[in-house]
Length: 281
Ligand SMILES: Nc1ncnc2c1ncn2[C@@H]1O[C@H](COP(=O)(O)OP(=O)(O)OP(=O)(O)O)[C@@H](O)[C@H]1O
Image (tube, rainbow, N blue to C red; front, side, top):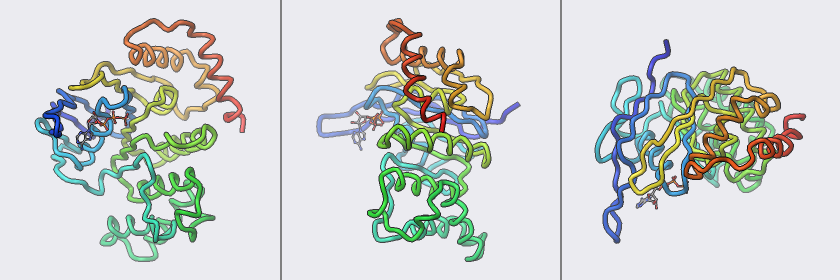
């Protein structure tokens, strides 16, 4: 029986702006098991990033609470690392120094300098960025910068990894590679992951459950879709699996306001055709 690792309990949040009070989140309840991968999807502006920021401890909810291992979250902490939409690297530090800064902050007491350097090296190798360790962010492509952001988050060895559309700005090929790497890394490190994405294929490929949020203002959890696909998941196989295709249909129907999918089979075939060249690598 899996244990609850992350618990979101009765979270409400309003933002107060010049135009008045805007209800953003209402009654968000979610229990995430240890090692589970949860994706969050929903329309633009419904409050997905806000929810992730609340779990990160960057925003305090008006009502409700976030618990990690039963302990109340009331500030950011090294147990919850965040990968942002854009990499957020410090431009005056090299790739290695960017990751080392986070590692030093988290592991200074527990590890000596040599062990911390090894940790940085290992995680840069994990995302295949070890060859660029001495470069500065402006010398990297967008995909490379994003990989460094992921290495930095992973090197903190967080119990919970929070990802806000981490691959959104990347080309399809790079995104597919990083998705595959993320699945391998998560299997290895057994982190609990909560990822916001706009991409239903990404959600169904990566997640154990997909949380679908209703449209705001005052967004709620509308529906949760289970993705009971075995792991490790091979892209080429998953894309043709009826479980994946059904989950995708459910998500698209939800996002389209429960309109029936017009032509599921040809849509799925197009998608497989689009993505298979990547899988064949
Ligand atoms: N600091 C803030 N002050 C006031 N309103 C905000 C603030 N941050 C976000 N909002 C508003 O709260 C709502 C939810 O924003 P949020 O960024 O969480 O949505 P989202 O679902 O992540 O959107 P997207 O998918 O477009 O990234 C939006 O209407 C946004 O304009």
